[in-house]
Amino acid sequence: MQGCTVVIPDWIWFAFLFAFGCCIGSFLNVVIYRLPREKSIVRPPSACPACNKRIQWFDNIPLVSWLVLGRKCRYCKAPISPRYFIIELLTGLMFVGVFILYFRSGLRAGIGPIDGGWLIYLVSIILLAALIAASAIDMELWVIPLSICWFVTGVGLIASAVGVYIIDPAVIRQYFLLPSTTDLFLREATVASLAAGATIGLGIANLLLATGLIKRSYDLRQLKDTADKAAQAEDVQELNDRAEVCREIVFLLPVVVCSVAAYWIVRGVPTVGDWWLDFSQKPPISGLLGALWGYFVGCGVVWATRIFGTLAFGKEAMGLGDVHLMGGAGAIVGPVFVVVAFFVAPFFGLAWAGMQMFFKKTRQIPYGPFLSLGILVGIILHDEILRYLISILYP
Image 1 (tube, rainbow, N blue to C red):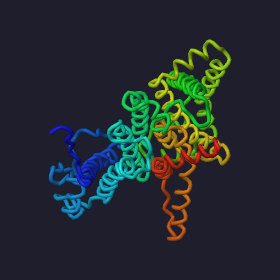
Image 2 (cartoon, rainbow, N blue to C red; image 1 turned 30 degrees about the vertical axis):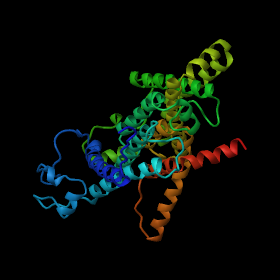
Image 3 (tube, helix red, strand yellow; image 1 turned 45 degrees about the vertical axis):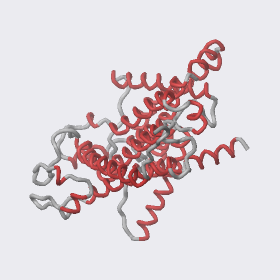
């Protein structure tokens, strides 16, 4: 039977991806609870936080168990937070929604299930799953674990360097499927030199930090050792926020200096410039440097807001978790779309504030979820944003 092709109906794809996404959502619930509490996400097996009884497999089925158990622990009848159900459902819907967006809607050009589009899908759902976990933790504890951000950054760097062996590099650059040194605003050699210089500068800055030659901002180890959380909070409040962000400026100086120096060396020394242009535009190198540039741009826009906002108002503006979160996102979506996400996020913040005013509530939530929604908008409207920017820059 030559030429026989088995076509899998869409409903099977949707059902499989939804079920698999719900399982990943169940794992995200473990991450959300354990990671900020510095517990292993692998061991021990899941247990009820109230009675510490181990949860059996039949009580750990995504969505179903929460409903069957009536939102209570089987043993001690302690209530089970609806967050578990919401995260599982949201993750399952996300798996299906991104699949429809990439492979069924026709809204994303250059992505196909056969020609390597699965890689873009995989990277996107990893990013969005990480954003779900980071946002849930941020909403509960006002902190974003840096390990989540570093994981996302690593995924972006690897995918951009390896992706050229799975997807035609010309297609990647044409449709901006993954970061590369191709940029709408800067020349390729410029992006490559700035990214390489900033990476060297970041290494120098971390070395200076490790040796104690520069000081870490908001270093709680310098505060008095106490188990009293209230007293610890008072100690943090006594810190001079302007002085603390000045330490961050000192940390960033090697990054800025090395990136500018690399740019001028490549531009001012013809032999170096020619060699660098040839080397940096090799597809895997271009992808890696493009992801690094996306990382630095993502970090930069938030860090600049944090520094200038703190210096202007004398109170810590934004958080370092937000800085690293946007850096990780930039390593996956690229510099253009991470900047777009940064400017879209305030609209979600304003909408939330308006809703709070309308319902006369005062609950505030951190900024991480708004940044995550901005990134989601960038992913959904990727091609529309790209076409709009090209029409402005190249009329």
